[in-house]
Each structure stands twice: as structure tokens, then as C-alpha cells.
Length: 411
Image (cartoon, rainbow, N blue to C red):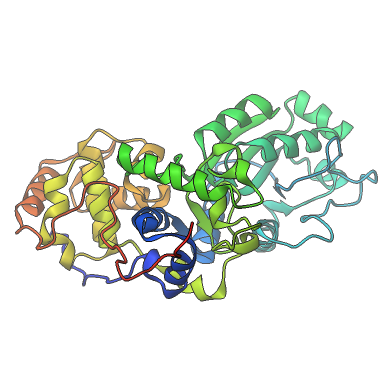
């Protein structure tokens, strides 16, 4: 079954957006433009729809594998030493921090509330200790958007554990904690496994890397140097590479995490692209962009499939087809773990999983997954299509460079 069945989707890169162009022009000299373009085009922009659909899918899929009631709690920062639950056992805790602006907490609380309304026999949204006891709840899901250092989850789980009843239930292995987030770094996962008592599983949609795995070493050094140099102008120079140098490149439509380089969100003697970590209305449409041929070429080139990346098959391929080919290329390089495949291809875990299922359906893959003879033949056929008129750039190189921009005269 031929893969090329969809019309090509055209899209501009994030750095081409007029709002981004103006920001770059006002903040960077001409000799830094190529590097800041590379950084902006390497951001993973997660829309409200993608975020909610991914979290809901993870919660329901994980919940369906468990028996009994499941309590949903949204992770949030709490004062040191605070008990998460009110002194009155019958009073439910607040889903969000009272009096504060509601960012990711509000989005997560909305998800938890809707799931509990849709399936009240299975899920409870922020129940009290009395409610946990009444329904004999043995499962707790802690929800978050992005986990970098893992500190917030460890501290939040400790706050849950300060309630004497819950502490007893967790110690007696009567209650288990599952952490579910859109993205979890390796460092964060390790911190959670070491610091959360009663931990069961950690579920996530994608694995963030420190910077982009697609960058060459030379390009990585250029981005590091740019972030550190201009990060000194902000209020958070110690977060030049993001909080605790996590160097995440994931930005949500509901807000920019502090795990990304501070030049994108911090203020001071600096005007950030995502000022106060909020997303400008002008950039909202950028979060609906689908998989681009540019990112597909970069992913294939990084996987060592330069001939496949440079051929013209991408011109006639839609986003689903490109995702399948990326997965076929990853499997050919013996990448079978979803988290690793996601990191190396730029796809989410769900996209990888769906592409594997389609590959099996089309006879291109076997469970495992492994390439079938038809899958190998399909990769050879796509490589054999005529070479694209535009040579594929080195992995990490931006295809677009705004030569027309003029940076400020003095730096």
C-alpha cells in the first residue's frame, strides 16, 4: 500500500512569524540571527488541544488498567513543610493555589474535573481524606505538564504524605502514587523515583532532551553561548539554560515553563518573547502547526537517513505519512522504545505508537516493532525518488534564515 496518499502540508517556521521577526530584530545583532532562528525553530509548541488530548488519553488508558477508584490531584508549589490536606478531614484541598494567577494548574484542574464528571464511578477530582477513606481509594494520580528537575513533584508528594492518615496508608502499601505528565526529563524521572514514597508508575507523552538532539556540536555551542550572553540581561541570569540548566525546548499554549532558556520568558533589562511566561495572542496560531517537512528532513538526517531526507517524496506526503516514515527510519536504526523513538524523531509517544499501529496495519512493521520485507522495500523506494531541488541541511541547520533582518547597532 503506497504511503504517498496525502497532499503536502505547507507551513512557515516559527521564526518566520512577524511577531518573532520583530522580536529578533530588536534584540539580536545580525551575526546572531542564524543562532536565534535555530533556537526558535527547535521549540516544541504544544497546543491546548494536543496537551489536553494527551493528558486525558494517558489518564484514562492508565486508569483502565487499574481496579477501584482513582483520585486525581494537580501538582502545585506549596510552602515548605505544609500539609496539602486541610486539618478538617472532610474538607477537600484546593486544586489551584488560592489568590494566584492560574496557569498550568488551572488547565490541569479543568482536565481532572472533566474526567471525574465523565466517569464518576472511576475517578475523583481532588477528594478529601474522608472521601478517600469512604470509597476505599487505593490509587492516586499526580498530574503535571512538564517535569524537569522533578522537585515540584517530590515536594508535592511529600505534602500529601504529611497527612497522618495518608502517610499510614502509603507506608502500609494500601495507597499507590502514579505520576502523569505531558513531558518528563530523565533527570526528573530519576529524582521522582528516588524521592516519592509509594510510587508506582511514571507516565508521559514525550521525553525532553537538554537542547535539541538534532543540533551538531558546533551549533549546540553557539546556542549555549547565545543563551548565556543575553541571559545576563534578564532578572534570572542563573536560568540562562532554564531552571537548573534543564534546557527544555517545550512551550505550552497555556504558558512557557521556566525550564526553557530565560531569554524567552524573563524580564529585567530585557523584553522576552513570552513575557511573564505567557503566550502573546499574536502567536496563538503557531501552536496549531502540524508536522512540517522541514522537521521531517531534520529528523531523518539526524537518524543517518540523509538520502531519504534529501529525496522529493516529502513534497507529496502529509503529516501522518511523514510520521510513519520517521518511525520506519527509527526502527531501521534499532530504536524500539517509545521514549527513545520520540526523542530522536521529534514525534510524541502517541504519534509514535499510532504510526507503529499503522505500519503494522500496512504490513510495513511487525510487533516489536521490526521492519518487514515490505517496510524495507518502502524505505528503498522512497530513497530512490528523485533528489529534492533543495539539498537537505546538516542536522540542526535551519532551512530558513532571515537575511533581511537588521539587528540593533550596539550590543
